[in-house]
Amino acid sequence: MIADQSLREDLDLARQLASLASEIALHHFERGVHVDTTPDGTPVTVADREIERALVETLARLRPGDAITGEEFGARGVSSRRWLLDPIDGTFNFVRGNTEWGTHVALALENQIVVGVITRPAQGLSWWASRGWGAYRSELLPGSTPARLSVSTRGELRESRVTIWTKEVDPAIDSLRRQARWVEPNLDAISAD
Image (cartoon, rainbow, N blue to C red; front, side, top):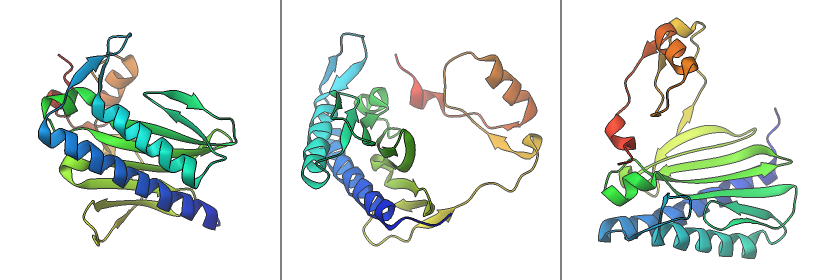
């Protein structure tokens, strides 16, 4: 696949947005978090809302023709280019002081994800990928050297290590547990009580 330079620019912007989100989130995480409850009963924090507002303002300035869908404030705009924002994924962990939370930024073109960035700010980690440019992992520190990621060369599921972070009961997951080399996740990190 030939890498599109405009996607590289979008990836760079997505990484900048993720860095801004991480900075704001860490500020709140380190000083303590106030939690509200949404009408559907899920937690939301001042940090969630502040991050989404900052990302939307940045996108409005740098990509004014693009549409945006954020977890906290919903969709705005109509375009074949849509930014997807999850200011804090893992809010339960965030409010409890657990480091298993992050920020997510993605770009969809014609409803296909072409750029994605995930951070784990409290752990100092980031992962990113873009169609045609590959996938990488690095520390969030300036100047850190990224490591290119690749698809496993394992040909059989039974040779693969698999874990899934879910509390849901699903026959497909049970089947996967039997067929692969299952690695138990840290379920305390996703506890919601």
